[in-house]
Image (cartoon, rainbow, N blue to C red; front, side, top):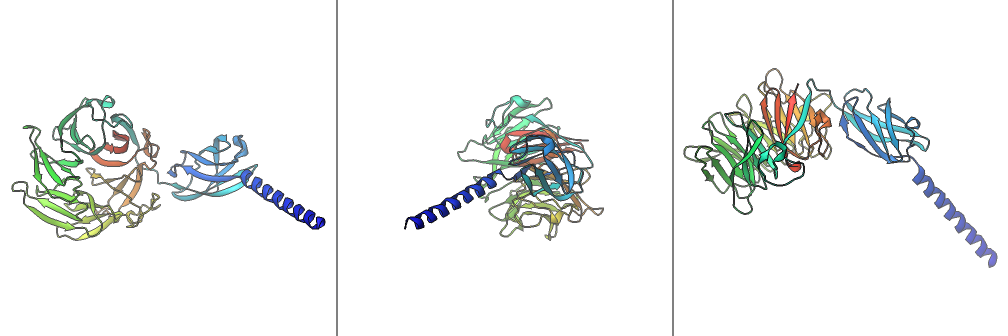
Length: 416
């Protein structure tokens, strides 16, 4: 009996030792966890997170798509790497170190833009949620959602949370022009009409407002709207409002405020609208993950987006708009040449969609030109970081303004 017990104990001890050896092997193996950012250009810096790297940069051999990359800094749990040259598209990251070899992470190389986009912060303080007037970054915003250009060239923006309409003068002085005092309000994006009135929504209360900067009157013009998101002024001078939960775009005669249905967006919800240079209404479809164009006859055509929800930002290597993912577009605007700049609140980025020679967006070319990583950083192109891109204003051919809503900032983009 003692012999049997001895054999059994020896067997269990051996098994335990093997399990311990196996466990120690697992925790000492090289492992890759993540890469940040996930999209970028040759020459950008990326951070590879993992386990059991060598602390000597020369002892870590990194390749991206089979091309050797330079390791600048090395720590047990991360590597700082300069991206090598590669063609646009997804490329596998491989690492070889004294502790072993590993691969599996993927980096998406983007097409290098034809222009340079330089981001700077002009209004607000990162993460400071207050509605405080002041000059530039001495002012504070609660949650800027939409931004517009007035006839005199100054900027106006809606500030949700503060439920305010605010004005940025040429010297960057920020002044609150009007407020909605009703409890539970949610001031959302607006637009100027030809007479200089500023139209905007309270999407929580379902109201459409008109603010007259001269008389200071801030009037409720329509009620009963089901989650109105923004305002667009049509070529006909009518007021167009997308109601996301109502699944409908309405138009209002500003003289009589008669409301008519312009278009239905079944099951998907219009989140933002704007008119292109040809007079077609472009609609961001919240739950359809796409942009559609509605011509004056009512024909709806998809111009961008796969129509499928994707947790990861996907750019087509060939720039096909219909193979590019959209997650949550809360704002876009048109450049003088017809180029469409599209924000994505979930991907924290801005895309540039250039139409084809006939002005067709669906057969144009799209590329990501700003952001793509959640956070806060000024800088060039994809090195800039945002935390929910909402409203976008194309001020002129060389300047964009962006509502970086969760960072509580207004950002300026200089195009060179």
